[in-house]
Image 1: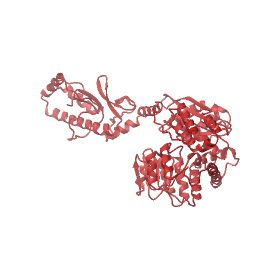
Image 2: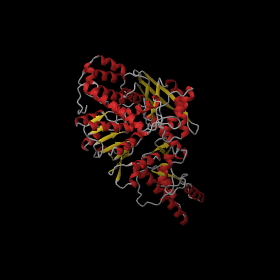
Image 3: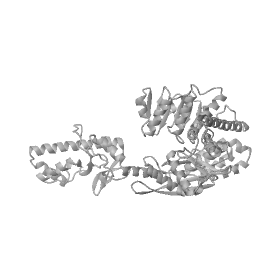
Image 4: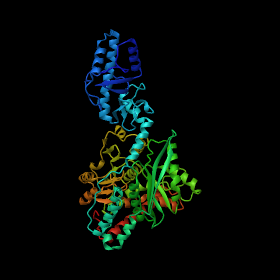
Length: 609
């Protein structure tokens, strides 16, 4: 039964005035089976389909005798005709509101729940655990908009309090240790197996790092079996030289203080000073920092330069933050990290969540604290010198590596269907160079799903995709302009027919089922663009199907090469053609070193190993 707010009593003119005032400010209190729900939401039209279904999250119970008597007292009052029509309209509106809440919001959006507050059941936000006007902006849409239900969700998601609560929730997820099953590969050599067992025993809660160790030990199994001294070398290599964990306090635009956690791992400096990326992402933790720095160590060792490996980052999420907030965070981050940086120590480069803006703020604070500008961070530059192709180097390098593999098979990229995942810097530059080589790239993806264009992308379409990403719009908007394209929600592009695949999104994006789809779609070569994009199970499937897998430690050398060219070469005013020529030569050297090492230890060129 639905009754007006303010209790049950004798009908009077004052009660009617209260009803009208409450209806005007869109504040309704629903009493269902003896419990009240405070709905701050606008009125809706009557819905004759509304029935006596229980409200979501409210436990049904029998009404007391006192409530029954109160209901009878209200029903016994003979209202006037005008009063009766007013109350009937209010009841209809209330029914519509409850109907909308129960079936649309609770079942579809999953962002609210019902709980008791001071003895009264109210609707709370699932993230920030607040209700009603406790949000900075009213989450339930009673600000006079026409479509109250949809505006309620929009108002709620845009509220500053909700965004901050969501950020803190995302950051806290990775601080809770969750037991993940770690897939352990069977190794032929007991010696190699002992190395993995020691790493598992030492770091059982770092699945990404353990996975990376397994991949490397599996690849080097023949090397280790030929010389037992390598066992001791591997044991030393798998322990970072220096791990730095520090607090990063910063102040937002509202004057509130927040604290994030920063990481920097100097994994190995045997070959020279460290180089490695900085990642700003809520999922960042020590295990991921170790995995990234370990991969970077081996990637740098494959490059033509003598460099050590490092990596790091923070669980700070730059998305949704203002420029001033990001500047204050970067300055606070550098206040601690700068003492471990320098051209002969360690220089960071861009990674996920770090672009031109973030690198500019970080380098500016480093120069201010260090008191000099020797060396510079390897990344996209705006206000200081740098090569014109720094940001393109990694993506272009992937395509150069693929072309080298195909050339050894007496084939070329021209006319081949290519599937690309991701839609960030690397993925977009892969698309560019594939088009330049005459290939047919047909997909990009993001966290929401993937986009396929059967006609293939061209330079004009890539420009349109960049505009979509710059405006933080969905890839779905692309299909509204190009009719031959289609966007698939919550899906991956690996079941599309292709010849070559370029996974460029994130680690472990390609699992066992994806690998099976890739094999069935006709793929023959996988060029890894992101760090460790394939799970161990996926690699097993691909190798059994004789699909060539080019690991990211070799294919991703382009970014390292470009950064060192900037730092070591005097001529920083190369044309794009000159820079691209130097990048191609460096990728060719890396490819030849990979082939020679494989040949020395008995691997055939055609083998998936």
